[in-house]
Every structure is written in structure tokens, then in C-alpha cells.
Amino acid sequence: SGLVITIQNAPADEEEGGYLSTIFDDDLRYVVNELFGAGAHGISINGNRVTPTTAIRNVGDEIQMDTKIIRLPYEIKVIGDPNVLESAMKLRGFEEYFAIVNKKIIMKKLDKIVIPAYDGKGMIRYMKPVKEGS
Image 1 (cartoon, helix red, strand yellow):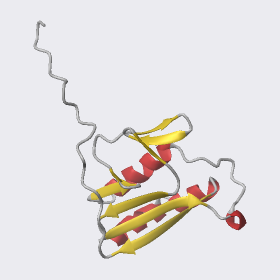
Image 2 (cartoon, rainbow, N blue to C red):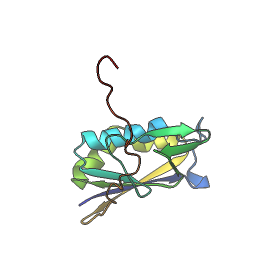
Image 3 (cartoon, rainbow, N blue to C red):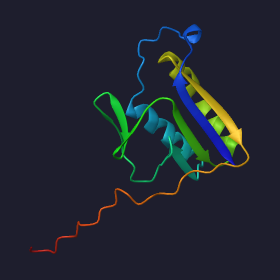
């Protein structure tokens, strides 16, 4: 079981005229960190598995997860107790924050959720430790 969180542009009639209209890498990292802190067992964003070494960062005007560009709408699938995960998101005020940046967050609890396995890409293959004195 788990939770599907969708972050998308707010409909024109719901826009609050916020001072920002962009979601940054920090925003997605805060969401991911909060979900793991609330007991998430696995997370994916737009079909890309989040691992302990996943880099979520701004590159120009876009956000990349490792080397893959992700764009709105962001679909975050989370495996874990959906009630606890949803409560954590609400307690931290993510709905209000995303409303300020003219985005809408939708949370949907599911009895069965599947996220992709880690594909192994991005692993360090050729780096070796340097021996002392070398």
C-alpha cells in the first residue's frame, strides 16, 4: 500500500498570485526527505526510483534526477503506510507551500502500489581506492 502524490500547475481559477511559479530541486528533496522520515519504504518520481545516492538538482531551468530530466506534473509514488505519509505531508504544510508557488498537490491513497526497481545506472564502476603511499 502507499500514496501517490501529484504536483501540477494550479488551474487558473485557483492561482493565488504567488511570488514564485517554479518548483526547485530543494522542494522535491524536502518532499522526499519528509516521506522517508515518515517511514516510506520506497519512492519514485516520474517513474525514476529514488535511492540513497539519487541526486535531485537544478540544471538550468530544469530538474534532473541523476541524469534524467523530470518535468511537471511530478508523480511521486510512495510505498508505506498511506495514512502516516499523508499526515506527514499535511503537517509539514506542503499543500499550502505549493499553493503559494501556484501549484496544486493531490494525494491519493492506494491499497496496491508498484514502483520501479533501481536499474543500476549511475553506479561507480571504475573508481578504486588509492593505496597509501601511491
